Length: 435
Image: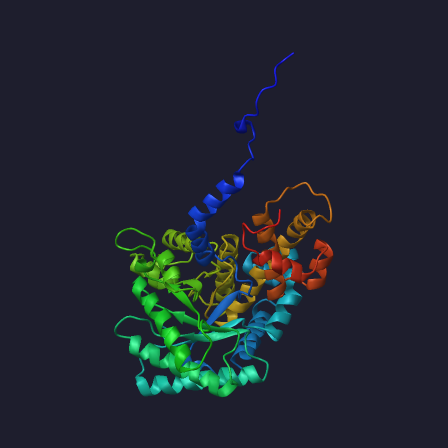
């Protein structure tokens, strides 16, 4: 018979772990706080599928509706049916036929999702008196559309940047634009978007954050109301002289005010020495810059936008089809790489923007819905998804609903849940899942 042995505390693996946990919490408190501040997760808002840039002097009441009408007229002339549009764009005819009624409805109902008053490259330097007039007139036109219920869900201004030659003019135009919105509407619109271009230092982003704070105080706005996008179009906004990633530091320098990163195709390519014939959203220098942007923005809630192509669908049918083929392929390429927004420069680009976007989300719909139905426990599926993947699946469906590619009813039926539940899943911060 074995003698009773005294209890050895080392054989109890969970005894006193509360002391260790308390010690870990104390050691990691600062890191936890930094993580919550720097990586808050998805914003949960509606990201537009594109931004339309129009010089300030060309902004007028009803402009978005005019763009939709011009896009429909271009379709009717150069691709009046699914077969013709398929041939023009290289998208399979069945896929085109499946989205064409939605596309045409979109061009009537909401042809532009984000309209930006351009006071930078697309506008130039026209003197203070002219720019004062144009920025106020543009703001009033947008407000008129907003009161009539026909303004795009997002609109705003791209001011001149923080370089010495333009900062005074940019500040003046921003002040005039915001003041006019407040005078006309009584409050800033929910979809207000401000863009800071030509960034060449982290300090310029810090200065923009300071300017936003000062504007809030002068205009009696709530703290943090003014956020802004960073236009990434210079090598200095990707890498600093010491080789560190500039754009990551810029996001943090914005003190929570940075809402999006927009890639500037042509300025960036030219600055990297790419000759004009080869400047493209698909060039390797563009892919490198956008990959850096993507990693820097991951988990921060900052949206990503690809740039534009300056090959416009104008002229005869042959020229329009060639430009459509290029534009549709570039939009699809961006979507596949996780850039769900881009720039459009001409109304004739709207058909291929929505065609490529709608086909992308329609293709993603059935498999994403089936996997989410399994993840949420409605059925037993053959794929065991992680919470982060479920979040991405939900985000795709919610984005598809918001842009018009998907209907709420069909998504609810396929997933077994409602849009609100999917939106909550899409905006949940990874690492906070109850699993």
